[in-house]
Length: 277
Image (tube, rainbow, N blue to C red; front, side, top):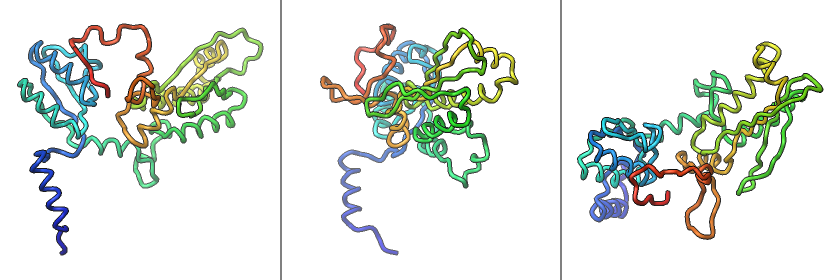
């Protein structure tokens, strides 16, 4: 058996010698036990840095003494995070040593996958698949569905709204607005919008509540509010949250769309500074 070229071995040895880089090359999920309020402050800061994603609890402000924190940590920042935890004597365990496996399972919609037998609405779909579904739904239900193009995103992806209406003509109707997918990585959100539209169409004239709702109001559904970010989670970075806009005043890409509201975001946290991520 041929050995590796000597320059490859020396290159990797040099990297290890210079950086000490013998840590995991996979994204991981850590379980961190927070025992004291001091630990809680540290955990809140860590969960808002290093490109981490807080899986549990729902937000940093819910981290307190006695909390078990589940934190997604990208491989390139794993050493920084674990060093911080060890320095401040926070106990942690690795509960998922290769998060990429889960990502691949979520995006694997191939005929050989046993999950293919489940409903279309029990799987996640790419942006292109969702656009196809929107057009097909309008073709299949021309009497109840209208597709409205309301504009485009920063990267010029179309923003399609699905208008649902009952078959009762001439009624004075109110309107309901539903949007999904404001945060790119939260795939369950667009999946819900697709499911809601299909459920409403399937059970119209079968379920009295659905029928009454569609007869009395027009429902406007925006399945993917952040198409640029959503597409980016499928092609590049599964944990991306923001859109993909660029600002002249910053080298950072993306805006967290619902952080533009005047709602005192992060005002209760003990965080002095939060690096861009």
